[in-house]
Length: 111
Length: 77
Image (cartoon, rainbow over all chains, first blue to last red; front, side, top):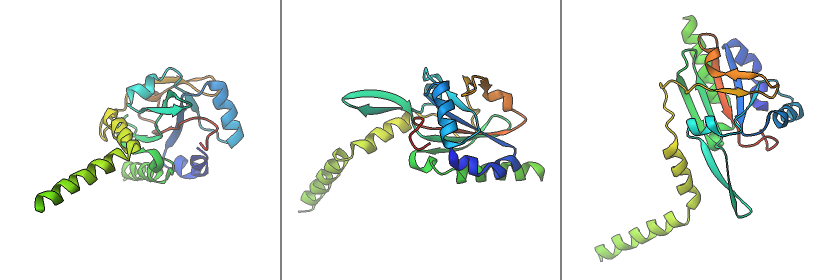
């Protein structure tokens, strides 16, 4: 999320907003945003509805029990609401590809 | 001799597959994902950290949206 914050100028230039999404509660996300100094909305999918809808609910084993949280995923949605780019897991940590896709979308639009 | 080699290769593959349960789990997760480039992203409304409702389709015609799903807060982000 901090990496996105660092790319804010490129995001603004390409008409792009970032929405962070996890299963954390709004107060937890507010504290998280403050701690890492990010200003984009962090959304709470506490009942796993969106994660299930998107097929990215992943099982994590912990202390002999099993929990379901988000699989790390980056998705670019264009202005028509269509998916333009999907990245998973370690590849989804670095925002460069997603930001480049948005810059490309914007360039195409103004041509 | 050739048959033995094929059997050995098969055994090797089996043992390799068995030693990577994490990879198998990942495939399972992939199989569940139906996200495809070109498809319309399923719409949703979720509460933000500022307790505001945010709806994906509200950005339609206005902004590109990057959805950054993260595992858990306070874990590297």
